[in-house]
Amino acid sequence: MTTDFYCFTTYVLDRILPPFKPGRVDIQKACSKMTFGNYNYTDILENFRKELINEDALQEGDTIGTDDETLLRFLKARKFDVAHAKQMFKDAQRWRKTVGGIGLDEMYKNIDPFDYLEREVVFESWPMWFHKTDKKGRPLNIELFGGMNLSKLYEVCTPERHWQTFLVNAECLTRECLPAASRAAGRPIGTAFVIVDLKGFGLGAFWHMKSLVRDAFQVSQDYYPETMGQLAIINAPATFTMIWNVVRPWLSKETAAKIDILGSDYQDVLLELIDEENLPTSLGGKCTCSDVGGCHLSGAGPWQEGRVGWGPRSRMENKKVAGPEPQEI
Image (tube, rainbow, N blue to C red; front, side, top):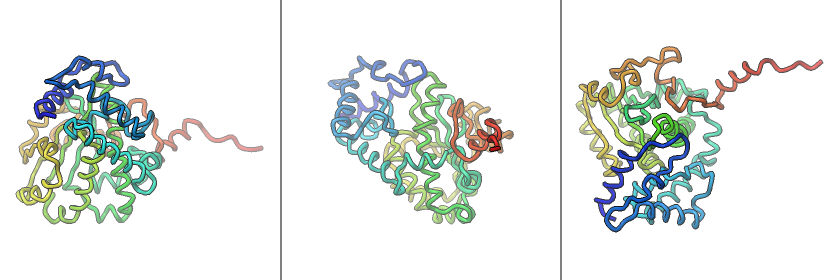
């Protein structure tokens, strides 16, 4: 598989696919005549799907995703090498069934990513949250490393429980946010725009949470490949060069190429990419989400349209709507 073919296919998928109606995106139909050199895009995708099904690695209804976009992410992560992409997909399926001793589907049933008891303290002490979309329609994932305080977090939430909330949040991107962003944009949206704010983040904090950050990167690259379209690091401190020298080996070459380091003069760059009404005021925008406790707790975005939650707040609201239970006479 040549680099030219990989780059060409990636460009087409990300830039010039035609609009589609809400629902499943039929990329195969849109690109049915696409060829480059001796390769036919649809043949590669179809062969990949058939081999996964024949080897019992993919079944209808699998929550990893059975659509073309999901399979494409694994193919792109392995430069369209079907054998390597297949192994990556199988590894991801195996992890999903065993993680945490209960599997990811059960974990997701137990924890609504937008509604769980520890959510407020988790997002205050480990601020990583989805918030609206950029101008391309990609979900924004905002991470404030300077606000991380694991000692405070672990006073009310065990490390195991916190890790589960992280995994559920990661799963939410592919299970809810990307499909909803695609419907809202009227075209395929397969990646998120990540903003990492390092204001107030120093070497001491980094060493304290280094292993957790490394594990988070590993989960993202191994089990949710090609979901980060762009990563902007803002307010990078003077010590960032040392931090980067540690972090860089954890990242694949493809991931590292998507990272922009902006320093403290970042507002104009972000506003070229994100509408000001979608960007929190703390990052130079105009959004406050003041009616729901702030942008970090709002979960605002197209994924909230028509969403029925299953966490404690949702259950309480459902009880209010249903009214009091009838009393026995």
